[in-house]
Length: 240
Image (cartoon, rainbow, N blue to C red; front, side, top):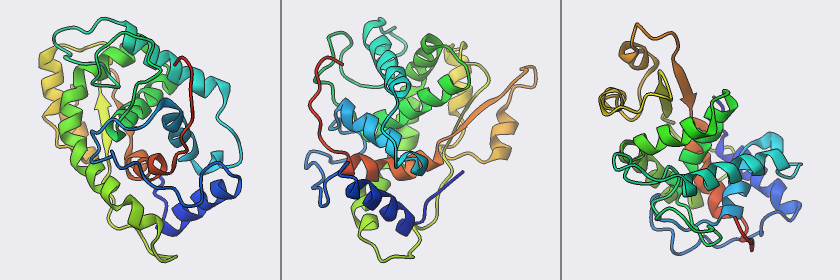
């Protein structure tokens, strides 16, 4: 798990500013009141997810990266929402439509990052989206406090003196034994864990009859995405 020191995070953003990928003195959107406020367009979401990784500082988002996001969002909008899920995986907006005006919250973007992580593990788009739909409300309750804190302090961190650390970091992990199992009983067992479980707590909750355990460590993104979203340039888009 990589957690950038505040000075390194600022240096990373400054390198993007020098390459004119973001304004030198951006003003955060005033509508961003908390981590659940939908205020970021898809172009900003792509930018933040890509450039939060320091290794991507000198290259533009790849076509395959954009396509993965596009397919996830399109499937989420087009697939009917079951009554048990209550909402889409990546947005609280009603499903359907072309999506060119869809806005996303900080929380939505972190869920999208989790989806990209599951795809990277080889899981199918449909099972990833349906699994995250089923867990969205529980994840929102668990993750929102940390994301609200990170959003509140992101502006100050970017202006902090060089060399300063960014404080104690909480490890935020998402785990499951199977993405295919979205039964209420199984999801209830997963959601019994605290929002920031330790490795021992995850292993203790693991069903011994299962052959595998899937764990995504989202700590890096949880702590850095808010700052990059606030810095992301506005871009006009056509159809999503």
